[in-house]
Every structure is written in structure tokens, then in C-alpha cells.
Image 1 (cartoon, rainbow, N blue to C red):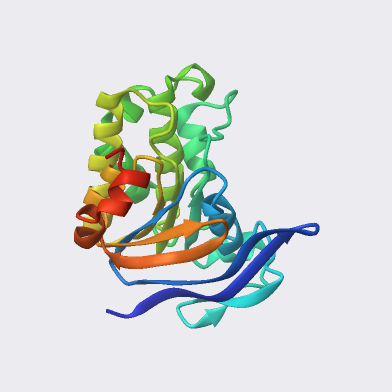
Image 2 (cartoon, rainbow, N blue to C red; image 1 turned 90 degrees about the vertical axis):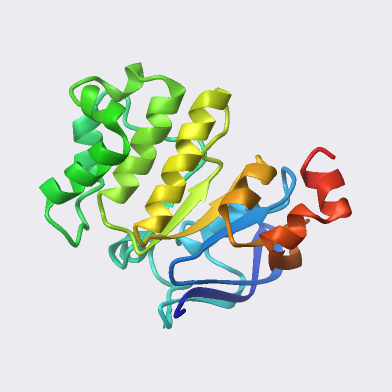
Length: 235
């Protein structure tokens, strides 16, 4: 499998407060990779640094071999690296369809082709396509945030806490859809508090503690690890 992106020795600080310390990780073509850690470990900071919203203090980030750590966020989006942030952040006064259209500005495919894909993955969005995004349920807004990201035909999808605050039945739908997105060929880096569900979905995972990567392994090993179970899986 070819390398999609690679972080090498990336450090980030908020003022004088360190947030990431020499973080290195990689994702290969077609993988779903999970990034685990307790609140405050640096997971969201990692994704924001990859997508260009935060500039690293040191280290490098390469996307298909090209350095992007000094690139503006909108240029990174144009290259096919798309970030779905925590909290959904849909445009509440715009319709579902208008929100999706905003995601298509950098698309490398026809807009109708992308609409068809999103509505196939999320039939509820088709039913609500003329409805204001702000009137959707939390689960529907998460579907919309993911659908908007898919409108640009991403090469790499960064998902930050997609199940946060959702009812269990909706969480099942979201994770099932993430699996389908990956099976369709999209590479995924997933940050998720529901560690057990994330490990069942991904093939590999990294564990982040206080801004440092402390473990990398295949998910089967992590699921059977007593220490990981106790700290992250509620064992």
C-alpha cells in the first residue's frame, strides 16, 4: 500500500504550553487508522495540525510525498485532505442541500455525482434536503457534516469524534457509514472517544498520552491488551 500521509516529529505549543511532543504517525492508502487518547491528550490538536489549522513548531507533514506543514488550510483542502471537526459545525440557516454544495467547491468530480453518493450513504439527508440544517437532529447534523466533506471527493478524511453526543442507535449508523466510506476507497484517520468501536472499525491505531505517541499496534492486539482495556475500553 502506498503512503497517503506521514507526520514526523511534529511538536505544537499553545504559547508556552506544549500540546504535541515529537509526534510521528502514518496512514497508508485504503486504511482506517484510529487515534486514541483521553480528553486533553492532543487528538484534536493532531488533526487540526494535519489540516493546516495549526502550524507545527517543528517537524514535517507530507501528503502523498508533498510537504504540507507550511501550507494554508484551504490549499490542503484543495489537495483532497478533508477534516470533519468535532461539533459538526453545519451552517444552521442554510438548507441541507446548500450545506452540501459548499463542500463541493474543490470537487474533482461532477456535483451531481457527489450528491448521488452522499444521498445513497445518507438517505435521510435526501429526505431533509430542503430543510434548514439548524432544525436537524444531532445525528442528522453529523451525517450532514460528513456528507459535506464527501462532496469534495476526499483522498484522506479526518474524522474528529463523529459519535459524540449521539444516541446509541445513531452511533451504529454513523460507524456503519464510516465503514462503507472506507470500503469505497477513502482513507480515514479517526479520532473517537468510543475506543472499542473505533478499534473494531480500524486496522491499526495509535495511542496518544499528554501529546506523545506511546503505542502503535494492530487493533486486534490493542483490543486484547489488559492495560488498554482498563484505561480506554472501560474494562
